[in-house]
Amino acid sequence: MKKTILATSISLALMTAASQAWSDARTLKFHSGLAESRPEAASLERFSELVDEYSDGQLQVDVYHAGSLGLKEADMLRIMQRGMVDMALMYGEYYNRDAPEMASIYAQGAITEAEQHLDILPTLRELYREGYADWGIHTIGGVVAPVFDVGLHCKEPVNTLEGLRDKKVRVWSGHLVETFDRLGISAQVIPQNDMYLALQTGVVDCAYYLSTVAKTVSLQEVTDYEAYLHPWAASPWMFGVSDRTWNSLDEQQQEILTRAGEEIWQETRDQAVDPEREAEARKEREAMGITMLPAFSDEDVQTFVDAAWEAWHEMASKAGDEGIRYYDTVTGELQSNSQ
Image (cartoon, rainbow, N blue to C red; front, side, top):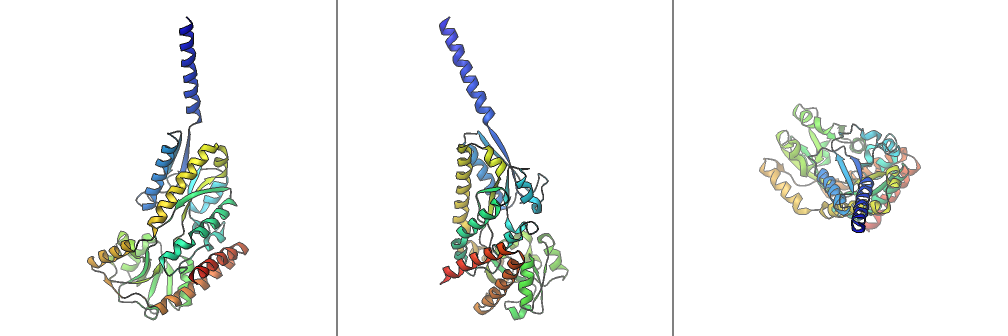
């Protein structure tokens, strides 16, 4: 009888422990506005797998790609502040309405050598950490986007700023419109999905675009020439956790998220700068029939960078004191590292 009672007690204890472990299990919803076909999406899935592995399945992260939760990028700071979703892939340039200073942290033309991006990453990360913290968002690593070549993809051979002055250029941001305007070059923001048609119909003559991934939008079908200008100043995608969610997690769960987020950051950082990848991409585009022109001259690159920094400073000034502080911090670090 005693053995039966003991066995029953042990069984009940095990059932209670299992029930407690199950009740403590958490599943976090992770919003991403990027399509699942994007390489960054694979990093999000990898993050989810690491969290599952490190928690023995007791902490799960469900990634919702392509905005499938119905959340708008422009609203993400407010959404996260209110704890309406547990996690999100945060990109500072999206939040110009609520936090214009965040869009002033980094800008095209900031770097002229890809390795500069790796040097400035710790500073960028700290500024984003500060900015998101003001909105009740805790950051735990993220995805360092690849530093792709940026070039001018044109219907006619152009590889000088002078040659662009009678051309209409597609760009992706207001900052770039201002930059080219300072150079006497007509530019307009055209969404990526409309870029092909704009080139095909003559709305624009050239596209300022990431050369390494130009084939994914079939630029080889509507342009014949390409000239390298500078490396992409790619703002990192940060993994944000709503403070409401973060504070509801125990210390072990917080450590697991932090560890997984940091691993993704380091993995993507190590892959961000890859000269061989860029060289192979150029060969691939030549095989598609694109004529690769000599790169823009050093003098033209410096002229472009000077204009980009002037437009960047103006953008930061409009964002207020924080915008200027971010601009001064990043440009000061870049200048210090180049000396």
